[in-house]
Length: 246
Image 1 (spheres, rainbow, N blue to C red):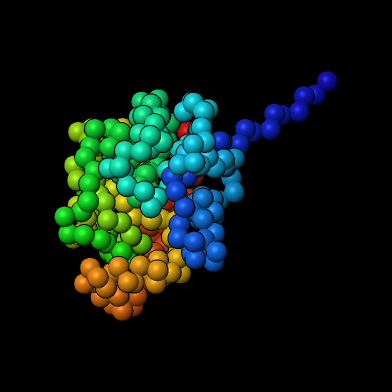
Image 2: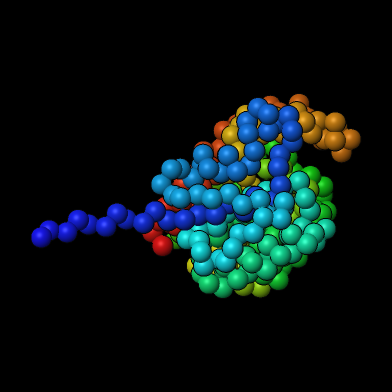
């Protein structure tokens, strides 16, 4: 009697949602998790868990991959949910589960692994900017395919001021020295937003305009500089591929 082959298991990825976008942007484009799901593609079994609302992600070993979103919260506030999530992420890294932290997630991952997070001494970075991939990223499974210089969407006031001692710096720019890092073989943090489209970035600048003007930033120039950032955006699909391979 012939046997039928088993259906391949679809890898399970969890998105740790650490907050929500501005209400007006959410009404137009949906929330953070929707942007990540779109970027990661449809070849993973994706679950969204709102850790900022107290939802539990279970045990790290339940997941084949982990993505941590951005947030309007600040890592330095050390909210209970954030600290708990940081401890969970450190366990995931120890277990060598692929992790990608973005913006707040990048900072929380660094904090959880012994780095230092705080307000950037030069204030806010918001808009489309050029990021430099460093020689240390040659052959990196996630960033190694990127060009040496690429555009990325950014909006943040806090930064990783000091990397964990175990981290390898992978990318930087003139404003932010720690744009991307890796710990071990499969845990990454990126300060920039691979999930943002140029329309989302422009909407952020619209909402932030009053604060940007108070901070003496040129809103018109920032808006004029918004452009698509497909190389940065490709990281999500690449991370999904790494999760499937692992």
